[in-house]
Image 1 (tube, rainbow over the protein chains, first blue to last red):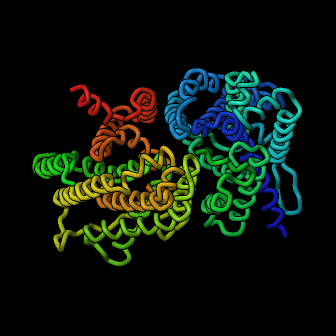
Image 2: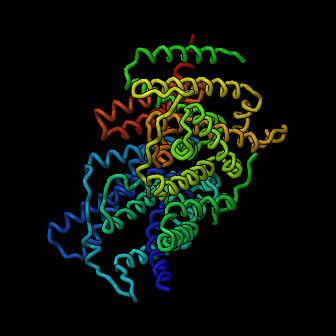
Image 3: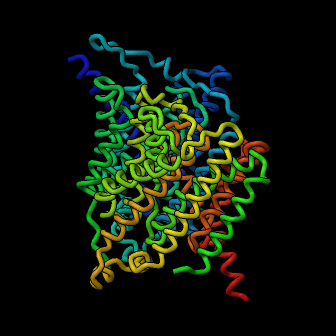
Length: 298
Length: 311
């Protein structure tokens, strides 16, 4: 019973984290058809930026509550800077190329950014545990749950709702959906696809950095942290269906709970189970759970 | 069938064998690893010609390495030639099974699904204490038809075996590429449905390619394991796969010789970069990949071809 509850909560916390990271990846893929490997680097930069900013913030001896704003500011700044450099400076030159080639371009960017990260921050670990500690814990039965983790779940929920609202209830969102659905037709109807691309990429980059920034207080921020994230986010997006927001949500929940179940019941298969689920889903639904089948073009 | 490429390969092989007597140990080791990894790249080249990229080739690389390492540790199989064949066959069988599923997918889905499979193996290896978890295990010293060299002699023996494997693999691949089924690669990339209308099964052709690429990667894994004397889960990690794809793009897919040149260049630059500027190695790697994609879509090999076309 207790294990069941622990799996439920741990899975939900993990899924929230995954969702925030994966939704940016999925959004970029849906709109631009770019599988952005550099998303892992956005995440890592977000984490480092947040750790640095939170460190500075607490050195200045300001009230704890503002630290959360610092996390947010770090994410937005990092996302804006990296996103615009990458999209305007590089990606727009390869939009016409093969999808697989563009993946390799983002992979190259990922490699470069990994080292840039190391050049800026060195190879030491950074800590930004203050916001995590400040929120305290809540005890449910025998289980201690950190309030920060609960906040993370709320944050993921908020992200999901805003994404849903933004895509279905605003003019911008509807334009975006039109581009996702048919790029050529949208251009024909006068939608400025270049602008849509640029803005989507910025939002996606910010979401990636956002995921990193809000994870920073939970972990020690060390080099190489983007490498694992990127394959995990891929798995989530592949399970849910590339480019689908509900898919990213369901994908994160599946992966989150599968992993939590593995951790509590059979720790040996922790890593294995995520990719096994992914392979299983792809075997039966190649396009993921929530994606439309593409018509074959002759 | 006995075209220029094969003669050129034989000439390179003779030069490589002669090199065994003059090159210092570090260069021998470097060349061994480079050619072993070039086998994996050769397999990726076959897939690339069909428009497919596998981001999980480390699956077969790791499977080959572990198959050989464990065959040595558990079964006492120490003959290097047998180990290469064994690892390659195991990887080919694995590729055949995985290929049943993989051959149905194209483009990004092919890449992602291969990635998932390689990460499954990685996850298994990392969590298996008996295999040393993340540290991996040392493998036993190989013998060559009963001859058990040590030290520098062993390094040279593995080198010669690797060169011979490289020659055989490259020649077989060259013959395969010239065959009808090999020549279907381009048509499948361009328009699969027309190929089907012409009476060939794209899925069967791709399945075969997956198996060949798997076998080559398996052999590469065994030879790398023999050269390094150690196997660890990193062999199956996605960054390893990424490295192979990198060399494929860098080298270009115009000829079976390209993967060998590309791999040699890659390993050489890497060993020097690791010594002099370890903190900017990935930066160089990424920049080189970007420049290649943006300015030399045909890879380094296209430089040779362009010159030949000019003459």
